[in-house]
Length: 426
Ligand code: AMP
Image (cartoon, rainbow, N blue to C red; front, top):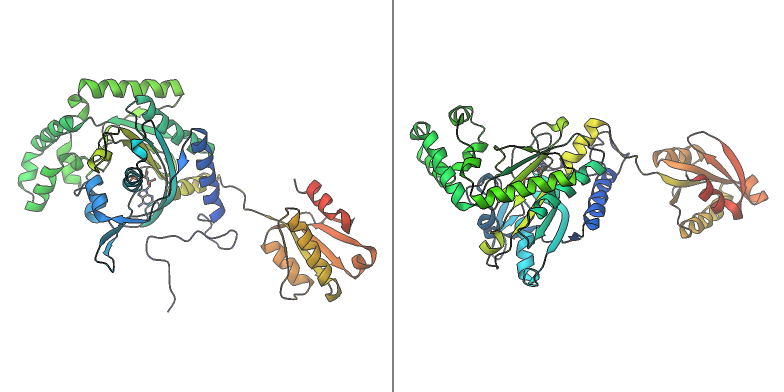
């Protein structure tokens, strides 16, 4: 039996070892490092929470009618009969942690960032996985529209820093509870004849959360929804003003955006600002999505703590970069040490040790391979230089330094090899 990675999951492998190289680990590391660097510039500090939580946390926060909770949760009972779910997103766990450690009681803001795997049992495809990775930000403890704009700005700067320039920020305001209740009634009214023809389950679901119908993939329902009012008509004065200020702040930050009233997001905890970022190669598949969640912490038993956040899909970024041919160079090895003859083995070994101490990345043969075999290894490891010590070099106290890309060879006194490498590794 040959095992395969579970359906909808990916291995991230060190390149260049395999043919399908999109998910090479160095590409991911580059994305993650760029994210953390930028987040740190804005004062976001990393938080790490468990991969699994009590399932109630996700039901409570995202809502039981959300597709994520209703259909996509990886849940199980553990040996202590606790009902557990692998996290389908980060925000709920991060807020649970903030509350548990009293971080939200200390007043002031918390700026948090993270990156790691999340799990959703959806239908896999390109850009849709069952285990995927999100980087994200949470700006906790402020109702300021500047916070919404900041989270969007960091997201856009991050994607731009990776070389993605053709970005579209789609922005909407979904209002507060009141507005959504009224809007929900308007939607139900609009599709009432369609709803009558549906089974009891669909009826109950639609009545419980009518806004979710706007996300529908059912073409019939989509037709029925044509001409339905937009949420904008139901917004309170307060929500409108907030939305205006978010837009002003984005203009000020030089972040282009488009108001799209059909961006509603699938989770219950959002209010007012919601947004998604898309980029052409992936079309409809959003690279990032987020919004304001002023009531979530209270919902989880904490004090009123207005907050805003974003989740960014790392695999989708890697696919976009691949489609655009914007791929970081694979890491190389500084030097592979070649011993031309058994008598130089000890010398090669001690030179390797010395060069590593000086900070170089160095490997050597472990299996007594012949010269050809050793050069093959050097190529496979993408070594910049082969440092060769054989009988002649032993006698003259030198080392032959060969640049593998050009084949150019230089004889260097052994005591000067590290200096030579430093000069030539540019
Ligand atoms: P969401 O909260 O569902 O909008 O997720 C935030 C981001 O995670 C999305 O914008 C995507 O980039 C990414 N994402 C969501 N679902 C998946 C999935 N099944 N596979 C890969 N990436 C995903």
